[in-house]
Length: 502
Image 1 (cartoon, rainbow, N blue to C red):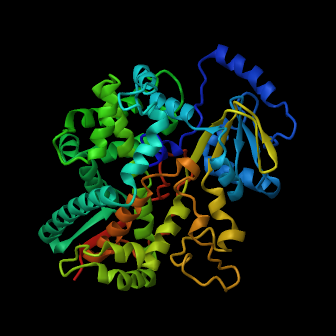
Image 2: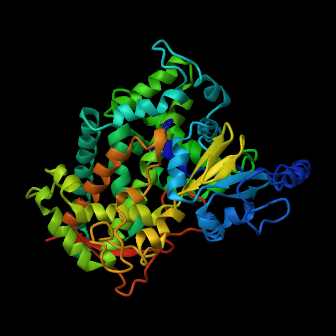
Image 3: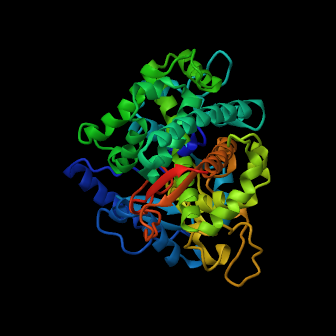
């Protein structure tokens, strides 16, 4: 989650690839020729672009590979340019330049948000317009006030404790359901796809905690639809008429309808969800658009938490010695029934668990923050010009050998607790990882995400014995071949056997 209803739901947004017939193509040729003209000190254009399309096809095929090529070609990781259907887009690569970009006032996110709400999340033009209006409390535009609203409602304190307690309650109920399933299963075991199983085990309690249980009761396939939404991302963000990719947009609308029909103001949903919907109602925004806004919160809630939890669990299964270290460390946080009774121990006194969390966030990062420039600015020694777009991909800075060590391409559980004295095995510190954005748009949900993921992963290992169905299971890695709204999924299936831990 981040700014607006959750900036992180849009942190993975890519520029719309718009091509609407021969007239648009002809116009694009003109724009492309203009885009190739270099202005003084402008970031140089990455070689290899195609006529008309520029780097758009490469971006659509594998954005991570394009960003990697940009990083290798750039001198000292200075900003460079790519052309996406004639649009000049600046790529920010160096960690220091990312920090500068996030702090720069001329770097704007609101227009990207408006585009994403309409194009991807099903908002009507009427709702996008009315969100600019003021209300009786003089809160001003909902775009401008969004980050402050979510920051205040998700900051450490009573409100964060409420949402964490609610999540732990629903997680315990889900663990009990799985326990009964295992007790009734032949041989006391089940065989599952690990990614699918983690999605359910984390997605069900987090949804129930934030929205109440009625939404899942109405549509039990919500989490499967979310996966489809991610695979449909290029279709959703194409900017083409929605009837061309009707199946993709229908899938999103079904999730919005589930929230519109299943959400109850008198349910166990968190107060700030209702509060934000009330702000929209005061601006005469329809119930469907209020549900669409709530959907963006829900999508952001799942977007990075589920992939991060998967990579933590998978990495610890693949390295059994690391799992044993973790199990020793987390034990004091649980009672005799294997329920979390000391969350502070997990969050503040479990450095190995913390290391696997930050390593998994680093390893699976795949999104790119997108901003529009409202004025000329100088970043990284280059001039970035007004009205251009800027991308800050998360992946390249997370795989720098000079920062993370010679093993930066591997998942290493103790990367953030090792002493860093062995040549090639650096400990960069967690500040080198940037999964939550930065500046005034830093994700306000980061505190809940930490509580949620730490407690979930620890609870899974405390309650269940998980082994690979195939002892020779090949190592899976993040699948980088598509643009995404979430952390990267694995590039292959991982099947596991689950039993109750004795």
